[in-house]
Length: 494
Image 1: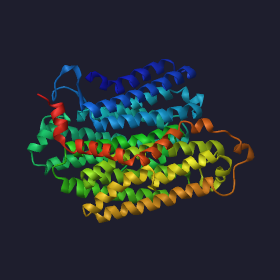
Image 2 (image 1 turned 90 degrees about the vertical axis):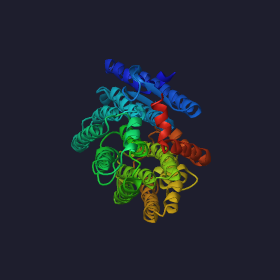
Image 3 (image 1 turned 60 degrees about the vertical axis):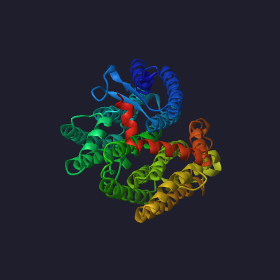
Image 4 (image 1 turned 45 degrees about the horizontal axis):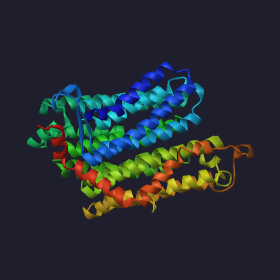
């Protein structure tokens, strides 16, 4: 039974390899990709329910017992992330069917797509910190292919920074892992948790912890290592930008939460309350100021990725069950809504041909469904009730006030207000006002583009209206990951 948890890794790997063979057969690639994506979504739903009902599932690869062998661990946090990944990947893939040109498809778009999922799913499931590095590299290699896909001059220029910064962060990752191994003699996460609990988390241990935080902050676009993101995500087509915006930075945030709740949690007064909280505050504030200053649809959304990951890390920094539960709830909300917003940008650009807000207008009149579905997603991102954005931000900010973290809580409230301002700027320029696109453009039908986005909008409504059961689930996830002994006992069972 435990073998099933390798399927989210092995299935996209096999399908990606098969799609390499059929690179020139576009229709066949779409059929295989679509069926596989739906199958992965259904399987992750099953796996999430199974882990919730029966507890953590551990797979010891090659029958080598932990901590000596490689282990995969499916707990509630990992399976939630797998499910969210499957939802986003499915929506972006079906949007890509209608927007990615055959010229782009020809250059291995679908194999790269599934190899990316191999790395992402592996990062969520691995119970070994070295294999976390390995899966990071897998997803990064696939993302390098996708971010330059199409080979425009702008993509190649801006993605160069993305590649370089990730090469340096990966090198730092290896150094930190080597140093950690030299101190503890193990790389199994559960065993690391035990070993570090036996040591005093000061000096060298805190230094290693901060090195890993820098690595994950780079992957997750936290202050001050976020500079690569806005322009890098501006270049790719909407389907790829949506996949990256909704998914990739959250892998870095997942790794941060996992490592700083399971391994490095003994000196929380320094690592969490000071370093992580300060990074979260600056990330939120500077990200949203970047968004407010922009007049391009896609650039505003790119900067909002930065500001919104700050909320997730803020929950970790406050480090109470309420705050961490809010962070997990917020991850689910943000992954869904941010993906939808990037796809809306792609649909709007299909009609108008531009993403400059000053050249857009009147989409509410010609494409009302696009306008109002975007409006719901926009105010959800800003944290307006009754949508998921409000109910996921509320416990984080409440926890901040309860713990006396008034400055960071105040910053979070200000960022929410500025987020609302910037999203209404998009709505006012692009959807409201005088029509600036031609009558011929106004006749462009985008129903098929809205079809894969509508379920994401429905989810943000459901996550808001069903806030109580969703928060209870998030609280159970938070309580599980904040009690490392549960994870340790599951992995290092006698």
